Amino acid sequence: MEITTTFYAKNRTVWRAWLKKHHATKGEIWLVYYNKSSGKQRIPYNDAVEEALCFGWIDSILKKIDAESFAQRFTPRKPKSVWSEMNKERVRRLIREKKMTAAGLAAFNGSAHRSVLKTGTKARAEKLVIPPAILKALRQDAMTWKNFRKFPESYKRIRIGWIEGARQRPEIFRQRLTYFLKMTAHNKRYGMVQ
Image 1: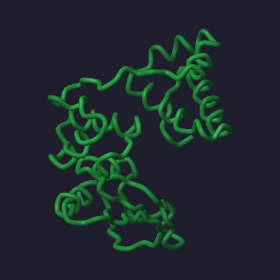
Image 2: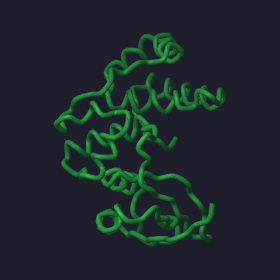
Image 3: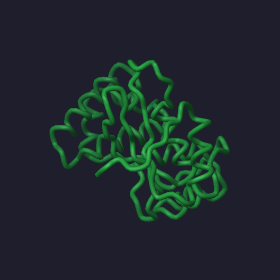
Protein backbone atom coordinates (compact mmCIF):
# COMPACT_ATOMS: atom_id res chain seq x y z
CA MET A 1 0.00 0.00 0.00
CA GLU A 2 1.35 3.39 -0.99
CA ILE A 3 1.25 6.52 1.14
CA THR A 4 -1.22 8.89 -0.49
CA THR A 5 -2.22 12.21 1.08
CA THR A 6 -0.30 13.10 4.23
CA PHE A 7 -1.04 15.49 7.08
CA TYR A 8 1.27 16.68 9.83
CA ALA A 9 -0.29 17.54 13.20
CA LYS A 10 2.09 18.93 15.78
CA ASN A 11 -0.48 18.36 18.54
CA ARG A 12 -3.89 16.99 19.42
CA THR A 13 -5.72 20.28 18.74
CA VAL A 14 -4.46 20.47 15.15
CA TRP A 15 -5.38 16.81 14.49
CA ARG A 16 -8.87 17.25 15.96
CA ALA A 17 -9.43 20.34 13.77
CA TRP A 18 -8.47 18.32 10.66
CA LEU A 19 -10.82 15.49 11.63
CA LYS A 20 -13.65 17.92 12.39
CA LYS A 21 -13.31 19.45 8.92
CA HIS A 22 -12.69 16.28 6.88
CA HIS A 23 -14.01 13.20 8.72
CA ALA A 24 -17.19 13.03 6.63
CA THR A 25 -15.60 13.75 3.24
CA LYS A 26 -12.22 12.00 3.16
CA GLY A 27 -11.62 8.27 2.84
CA GLU A 28 -8.14 8.22 4.35
CA ILE A 29 -5.24 10.31 5.56
CA TRP A 30 -1.65 9.41 6.43
CA LEU A 31 -0.73 11.16 9.66
CA VAL A 32 2.96 12.09 9.74
CA TYR A 33 5.01 11.43 12.88
CA TYR A 34 8.59 12.57 13.33
CA ASN A 35 11.07 10.43 15.24
CA LYS A 36 11.89 11.81 18.67
CA SER A 37 15.51 12.27 17.59
CA SER A 38 14.39 14.77 14.91
CA GLY A 39 13.50 17.29 17.61
CA LYS A 40 10.25 18.14 15.80
CA GLN A 41 7.02 18.38 17.72
CA ARG A 42 4.51 15.61 17.11
CA ILE A 43 1.21 14.36 18.39
CA PRO A 44 1.56 11.36 20.72
CA TYR A 45 0.19 8.13 19.23
CA ASN A 46 -2.44 7.68 21.95
CA ASP A 47 -3.78 11.21 21.42
CA ALA A 48 -3.98 10.61 17.66
CA VAL A 49 -5.95 7.39 18.14
CA GLU A 50 -8.32 8.91 20.70
CA GLU A 51 -9.13 11.87 18.45
CA ALA A 52 -9.70 9.52 15.51
CA LEU A 53 -12.12 7.45 17.61
CA CYS A 54 -14.01 10.65 18.51
CA PHE A 55 -14.87 11.03 14.81
CA GLY A 56 -15.42 7.35 13.97
CA TRP A 57 -11.97 6.82 12.45
CA ILE A 58 -9.30 4.21 13.18
CA ASP A 59 -5.55 3.80 12.72
CA SER A 60 -3.92 1.02 10.75
CA ILE A 61 -0.72 0.64 8.72
CA LEU A 62 2.55 2.37 9.64
CA LYS A 63 5.06 3.18 6.89
CA LYS A 64 8.46 4.81 6.92
CA ILE A 65 8.74 8.03 4.90
CA ASP A 66 12.42 8.82 5.41
CA ALA A 67 15.15 8.69 8.06
CA GLU A 68 13.32 11.03 10.41
CA SER A 69 9.62 10.41 9.79
CA PHE A 70 6.92 7.83 9.24
CA ALA A 71 3.20 7.93 8.51
CA GLN A 72 0.22 6.06 9.86
CA ARG A 73 -2.92 5.49 7.85
CA PHE A 74 -6.23 6.61 9.37
CA THR A 75 -9.60 5.80 7.80
CA PRO A 76 -13.28 5.87 8.75
CA ARG A 77 -14.23 2.71 10.63
CA LYS A 78 -16.21 0.11 8.77
CA PRO A 79 -19.65 -0.52 10.32
CA LYS A 80 -19.03 -4.20 11.13
CA SER A 81 -15.40 -3.87 12.19
CA VAL A 82 -14.19 -5.55 15.36
CA TRP A 83 -13.32 -3.21 18.23
CA SER A 84 -10.35 -4.04 20.44
CA GLU A 85 -10.88 -3.97 24.21
CA MET A 86 -8.47 -1.06 24.38
CA ASN A 87 -10.49 1.02 21.92
CA LYS A 88 -13.77 0.12 23.64
CA GLU A 89 -12.31 1.37 26.92
CA ARG A 90 -10.99 4.51 25.24
CA VAL A 91 -14.45 5.24 23.83
CA ARG A 92 -16.12 4.67 27.21
CA ARG A 93 -13.75 7.19 28.78
CA LEU A 94 -14.12 9.68 25.90
CA ILE A 95 -17.90 9.50 26.34
CA ARG A 96 -17.59 10.28 30.05
CA GLU A 97 -15.29 13.18 29.16
CA LYS A 98 -17.83 14.38 26.55
CA LYS A 99 -15.26 14.35 23.73
CA MET A 100 -17.05 12.00 21.33
CA THR A 101 -18.75 13.58 18.32
CA ALA A 102 -22.00 12.42 16.74
CA ALA A 103 -19.97 10.67 14.02
CA GLY A 104 -17.85 8.82 16.58
CA LEU A 105 -20.89 7.76 18.58
CA ALA A 106 -22.64 6.61 15.40
CA ALA A 107 -19.63 4.48 14.44
CA PHE A 108 -19.53 2.92 17.88
CA ASN A 109 -23.30 2.48 18.19
CA GLY A 110 -23.38 0.97 14.72
CA SER A 111 -20.88 -1.67 15.77
CA ALA A 112 -21.45 -4.88 17.66
CA HIS A 113 -21.23 -2.93 20.92
CA ARG A 114 -24.48 -1.00 20.60
CA SER A 115 -25.69 -1.72 24.11
CA VAL A 116 -22.75 0.08 25.70
CA LEU A 117 -23.96 3.51 24.73
CA LYS A 118 -27.45 4.23 25.89
CA THR A 119 -26.89 7.36 27.91
CA GLY A 120 -23.14 7.83 27.87
CA THR A 121 -22.79 6.41 31.37
CA LYS A 122 -20.33 3.85 32.65
CA ALA A 123 -22.61 1.01 31.57
CA ARG A 124 -20.79 -2.06 30.33
CA ALA A 125 -21.97 -4.00 27.31
CA GLU A 126 -20.66 -7.32 28.45
CA LYS A 127 -19.23 -8.98 31.51
CA LEU A 128 -15.50 -9.60 31.44
CA VAL A 129 -14.92 -13.23 30.51
CA ILE A 130 -11.44 -14.56 31.21
CA PRO A 131 -10.49 -17.44 28.90
CA PRO A 132 -9.83 -20.66 30.85
CA ALA A 133 -6.09 -20.88 30.01
CA ILE A 134 -5.48 -17.31 31.22
CA LEU A 135 -7.63 -17.80 34.32
CA LYS A 136 -5.76 -21.01 35.21
CA ALA A 137 -2.39 -19.23 34.83
CA LEU A 138 -3.55 -16.33 37.02
CA ARG A 139 -4.74 -18.65 39.77
CA GLN A 140 -1.51 -20.68 39.92
CA ASP A 141 0.09 -18.09 42.19
CA ALA A 142 -1.94 -16.70 45.11
CA MET A 143 -0.26 -13.27 45.05
CA THR A 144 -0.73 -12.90 41.29
CA TRP A 145 -4.41 -13.78 41.60
CA LYS A 146 -4.87 -11.41 44.55
CA ASN A 147 -3.22 -8.52 42.69
CA PHE A 148 -5.17 -9.21 39.51
CA ARG A 149 -8.49 -9.08 41.35
CA LYS A 150 -7.65 -5.58 42.64
CA PHE A 151 -6.86 -4.12 39.21
CA PRO A 152 -9.47 -1.83 37.61
CA GLU A 153 -11.97 -3.53 35.31
CA SER A 154 -10.84 -1.44 32.33
CA TYR A 155 -7.21 -2.49 32.78
CA LYS A 156 -8.17 -6.17 33.06
CA ARG A 157 -10.26 -5.95 29.87
CA ILE A 158 -7.44 -4.33 27.92
CA ARG A 159 -4.76 -6.75 29.09
CA ILE A 160 -6.88 -9.89 28.64
CA GLY A 161 -7.96 -8.67 25.19
CA TRP A 162 -4.34 -7.98 24.24
CA ILE A 163 -3.20 -11.44 25.32
CA GLU A 164 -6.17 -13.21 23.76
CA GLY A 165 -5.60 -11.28 20.52
CA ALA A 166 -2.48 -13.39 19.99
CA ARG A 167 -4.28 -16.73 20.46
CA GLN A 168 -3.55 -17.80 16.87
CA ARG A 169 0.18 -17.09 17.37
CA PRO A 170 1.13 -19.43 20.24
CA GLU A 171 4.63 -18.07 20.86
CA ILE A 172 3.44 -14.46 21.09
CA PHE A 173 0.46 -15.55 23.21
CA ARG A 174 2.86 -17.22 25.69
CA GLN A 175 5.17 -14.19 25.73
CA ARG A 176 2.30 -11.82 26.43
CA LEU A 177 0.81 -14.05 29.10
CA THR A 178 4.19 -14.58 30.80
CA TYR A 179 4.90 -10.84 30.86
CA PHE A 180 1.41 -10.10 32.19
CA LEU A 181 1.79 -12.69 34.96
CA LYS A 182 5.22 -11.34 35.91
CA MET A 183 3.97 -7.75 36.14
CA THR A 184 0.81 -8.78 37.98
CA ALA A 185 2.82 -10.79 40.52
CA HIS A 186 4.69 -7.53 41.30
CA ASN A 187 1.38 -5.62 41.42
CA LYS A 188 2.45 -3.48 38.46
CA ARG A 189 0.30 -2.30 35.58
CA TYR A 190 1.79 -1.55 32.18
CA GLY A 191 0.82 0.00 28.84
CA MET A 192 1.11 -1.37 25.34
CA VAL A 193 4.85 -0.86 25.01
CA GLN A 194 6.91 -3.50 26.81
